Image: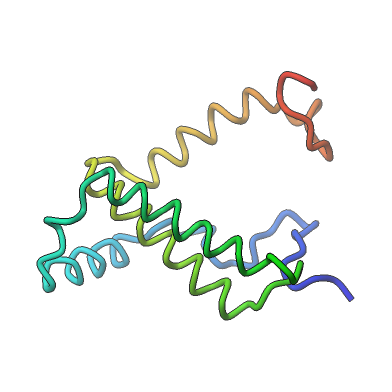
Length: 126
């Protein structure tokens, strides 16, 4: 039986986000949540970056002794990581969709399909 987090081989993403990267609704909900609690004062870029690293560690911990992880815990920790990433993007005044797409364009040039398909080597070793 395949692990529940096995990568898809059909090129799909299960319809989970393909047409909706971090939606405006999600970002607006986060902004409202923070404003209602007057937490923006604590959301310095440094604090948000630290929080991303901390939450990423907690996400990794889900797989510490179990390669398959617990889907419910993984989702909760992944939500924390994404939340802090979106908050940092907002604080820095950058568009999360735009920066992801810009980075993807750069990565496409570093990993051309004809050289990188099915390989995990770094771009300089292709």
